Length: 288
Image 1 (tube, one colour):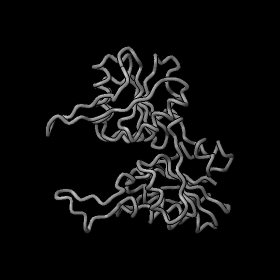
Image 2: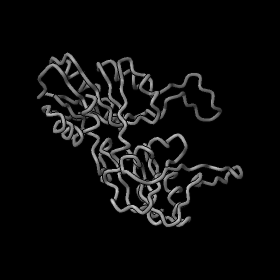
Image 3: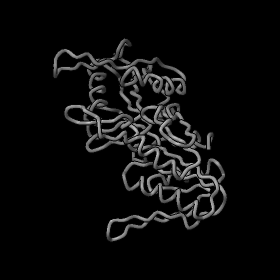
Image 4: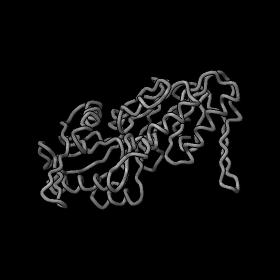
């Protein structure tokens, strides 16, 4: 059965439809003292697929409770799907100030260990660093949703240019381009001219008169992405689209992108937002 966290209800329903597995009834409750209770009173069967984007600390706790709940109900196998893994970007010890990391956690590892206690297998969708999968104490596989980002793009893109925000994300741009079927690939490079002056520009490809698609795994604050969009518009891009797997869009991120002149923002349902245009359910179904 498919068991949904409160943050992933649409994705869980889509996964149930994709796999033909039944969607379990779930309930979520908050007590006056602030404690939460996530339960799966409708669960029955030997295998549970728990789908929960851990976008908040409460969502992390819900996931741990749901894993325990299905075990209590008799599940002998628990597959935990993390469409979006919170804290995944803290994959190294981070210490503000002087940078001395002694006594500071590797938060991604701490989260992975906690989730591992209730799961037999983990499925991740485009974690910021693939090596995060190694932090789990049970087998973990990674699903690449970048090709799905091609689906909502207009079919009439003019000489499309698929851009990654840096060289390390070029494979994401390539995945979207290959699925779209045409276009070229480039990435942005940062050139520091002084302590507070940084230039962001496409590394090689011409931009003028072309439609540009900036592809990334996560759009969080939108600051870097909006700067990139500004550069493309200044260089004469015809239209600029943003396509991301995880639309965190914290704070005023969406407004920043609109102010920069983005034609549209397309995202998957790993985080359920107004910008969600395509589901990763079929990609997850292939591995669960």
